[in-house]
Length: 90
Length: 252
Image (cartoon, rainbow over all chains, first blue to last red; front, side):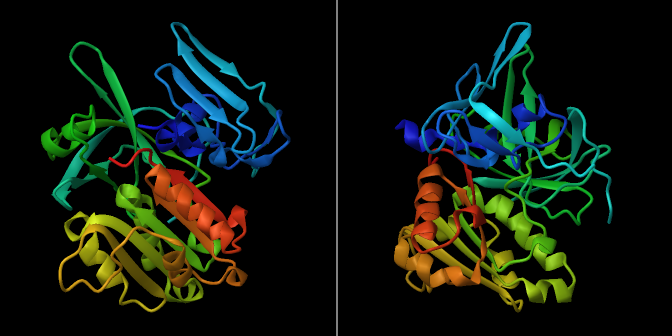
């Protein structure tokens, strides 16, 4: 089975993201550090693996956000996001 | 029915199965009563968690099939052979049993009638589930709101017996402003009046409104179908930001 068939998107990571953020962020707009592409987190491509979640830019494949669960830690690498705009109704 | 959406940690809750019904030979709908359910939006999903006696945990996401107007939530689960979670939900779980759920989850692949339309829904296989929540929400909206939002659904399945909610969809198609088209990719009965092939550019073009009408499109199902259809819509001139996708992974 090819990797392409198995890929998901930011929607599939929404539950894991909800553990980090107080609100849904799939509708939040992320700017990719690699190429500057701007788009909703829901449009990032997810290549899940047993240890966690990797969201990649649909344009340049940069790993925009990585969340990995290790014993005692939730390791978050957000270095691929240069800006995140989260809708706020407050 | 206003429900306060309270930001904060999403907790696991034990829901009770209050109803179970078979939709097709592989798909089963579970209606759940979730304590302190905050309400949801059409298109959202829940996470379901199973814990075995030795402590092993398995977690999967299932789209909510019911509209926000219902007090309980309905999940339609497609049984995947030799999988970890769906055989349990389809074959073992009974009315009265508990089930750990977390949700509602999602904010991108959602639609409310207030967002307007026209609304274009394209589903492959179990991708019909979140789109059904949108259609049911549309059907439950007041007549004026509904009249302002025409809906078209294109639903692809292998055979006629794989069409989930077929009867209900045929009834909804009787409503003004709702059109439903089916396509069968493997077996079609002799008297079949719908399409008989995989979704392609000609079919998308026939079913969709012209790009100038600026429909809101939601595409859900197996990854290859979703990506192919989204690409076709953009090729036909639709604004990519008005084409929302939810990939379900490989064709089962």
